[in-house]
Length: 389
Image 1 (cartoon, helix red, strand yellow):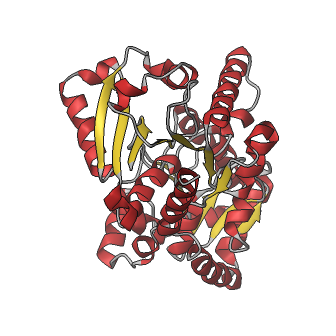
Image 2 (tube, rainbow, N blue to C red):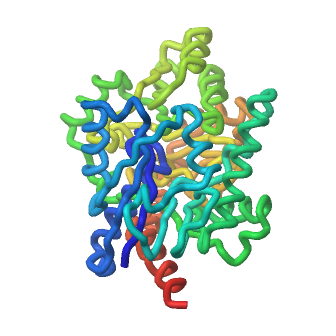
């Protein structure tokens, strides 16, 4: 069986969409079906990425993170800012990108193009976050309209739509009733062994110094996007009693300029804004946290939540979107639109020892429900079912 896998950026740190693809491929490589499957990846390279070192770096990244995928690269004249919209709103030359006809075409990053390839078409719609962006003038309205059209193309052209939670399934059906009968809920997994294996005392000491976390800290892992609600999280941290802030830093793995300006204005000495955490350090950083914070206003799944549970770290998450579904009663819930509610949850999870112990035990058990093997097996099973029709 020949599978064509459409790829763009494949190495965005702490990005759940990217991680789902990478880990699913690793799990698939261990299945019997992988021996009968040839996967060809196709990726568009921007004009500036054609040159020397940048091109070599991209190729190296794909070899490391996309195991078993024979990559083809196609240069494009699309400008970087418009690439996402142009590649999915216009028709795609599948022969040019993939080189040959495939049995299955997989589009793992929410969208597929305006034209349908001649083969079984699968798309993974992780969430509809762009459609929930707050109103922000004409530019924002246009972007939302374009995303809506891109999702519509995906639903129309897909033979099967995979999504990562029942909440996301409900959202897709709400906006696109024509998706009924096409959707398969396929939860994300987590590398329990990686996050649960205790880091050495030396490693913990090393990452605490490297990332300036201090001995105790609240931790956010992910990208600084609007739905991650980091501005309210920062304000909530400022509301905490001084004694708690004195002994517990707030460590945010990625930040943008606006969040840095907000932190400077609040003059919070305990706010640590990083530009990413290296993969070799992430398990130790998570294990060292007093609590993981994921108080997003909207998510498709919320992978850091499960990773923290596997690591034995109590979690605070939102009482909206898919997060209560994924938490399964193993996290402390807060109202993401209320800084007071977030602050109260932060204080409670640090000071209530009985609650901490309960959440740690429940979290470890809950994390066992999510494995990349299950994710890969479900994908293979559902594709096989449709190919045999």
